[in-house]
Structure formats: C-alpha cells, structure tokens
Length: 178
Image 1 (cartoon, helix red, strand yellow):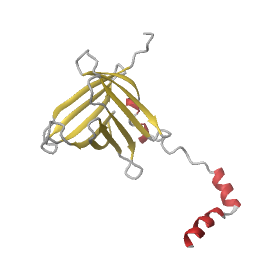
Image 2 (spheres, rainbow, N blue to C red; image 1 turned 135 degrees about the vertical axis):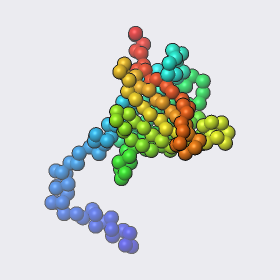
Image 3 (cartoon, rainbow, N blue to C red; image 1 turned 120 degrees about the vertical axis):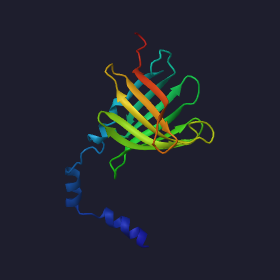
Image 4 (cartoon, rainbow, N blue to C red; image 1 turned 180 degrees about the vertical axis):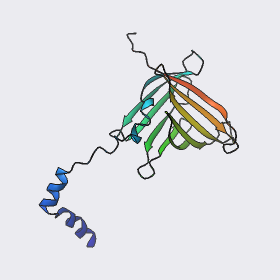
C-alpha cells in the first residue's frame, strides 16, 4: 500500500512548484566544454593506414542522445567491424568508451582530452592473438588537413613500454559528385 502512496504524493505537488519548475529550464546536459572534447572525430570518414594510400574502410562517427554520446560504426573492407559508444561519465567527468567488435568481444576505455588530443586507455583481450592481452592506448589527433589520426599503442608490461598496434588516418569522406 505504501508503494502506491509515494507516487500519488508526487502527483499532488503544489501548482506553484510545478509552475516554478516549468519556468526554470535547465541548460542542455551535454553542451559543456567537456562534452565537446571528442567532436574532432565526428563525421563521415574514409579510413587509410597512416602513410598509405589504399583505403581500408569507412567510419561514421556521430553525436547522439542530445550530444551526450559519440557513436562510431567502423566498417572495414575485410571484416572485423564493430561499434563504439563514448560519453563523459556524469560523476567523474572522464570520457569512457565501450567497443564491441564483430568477434563479440568488448573493450572498455577511459581517458580524456590531453592538450588537443583525445587519449583513451583500456585492456583489450587477445589483441596480440589468442591469449595475448594488452593495455591499449588510443590517441585521436586532428591533423592540419582536417583528417584525424587514430594511433593505437599496445603494452604487454602494464604501460612500461608501448608498440604501435594500429595507426589510421580518417579523411573526410569525399562527396559522390567530386
């Protein structure tokens, strides 16, 4: 019986309280400077290996949920696609990203803006092959030509040393008429 009384009490708030709430419109939740930290990656992209001219895939990165999340749909030409979802954690103010690949494996990253770059770090199971897990640090950097570099480095010694695991250049997708 008490469970029914509580919601009813909420519905019986005074008209003055309801009117005050309607007048005090809060600012959009995800339009802060912190939430713009990953805007450099938002767009439609043709993806190339760094230093190479042979395109390896496409990527669509968009802001969703009133700008509260950034979602990437990674579409490589030779399988292995996936989706990532990134957001600013409402309590810590740090960026978090969850990646789920076509292999069904999930990787959780955390980090934030460092200088002009976005840097995210997380443990990735089997990135170096079966049973070879690594700490992965991804750095997203806006380039002078408008492209974005995604440099992934892996460490099997908990961050004491790093080796390049992947290195992509995201170039703005060319329009069909170009």
